[in-house]
Amino acid sequence: MTDQLHHARLIARVAEARDKTAFAELFDHFAPRIKAYLIRLGAEPGAAEDIVQDAMVTLWRKAHMFDARRASAATWLFRIARNRRIDTLRRDRSDRLDPEEPMLRPPAPDAQDDSLDARIRDDRVRHALKDLPPDQVELIRRAFYSGLSHSQIAEESGIPLGTVKSRIRLAFTKLRKTLEADSAVDRP
Image (tube, rainbow, N blue to C red; front, side, top):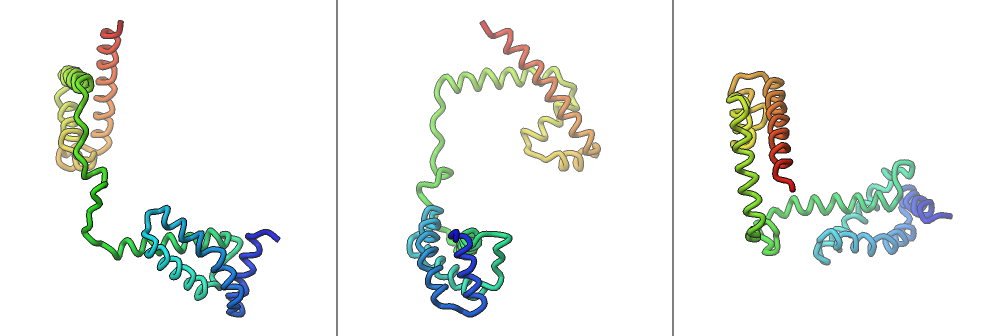
């Protein structure tokens, strides 16, 4: 008998007869695996143990809801544990900051070559923008410099959404051709 089938039968025994021996076997098998999984996801060991306990209590209470045709016992239990962890994280809306959070670190200084390349690219884009019709330049400015969505641009300008999208797409096509032509000239 496969482990999957064996575990499904144990859950059925818990559901039908509240079989404590079957539950203990499931607990002994899954609890350490679920705890290790939660720790890999970043849970503290104590919190992981609490979540495992909660997941196993859910197994005891809701064994009748398990459907071996839809998922294996492992999938069902790990999903319960993952959802419990998410619930715990949502409840713990503390303002603690992780000093190792990448977003809190200052950006690395630009390499001189990267800075020069960026300036050259910016100059090329500004030059290419001059070749576009003013209405397309304005849409590009609103979308990429002001950060507006196409819908917001359409609403503010009174231009239909489809027209906004097609003009931006047309502007990009023209910009790409101009920039590619400039790059071809610079290549040795």
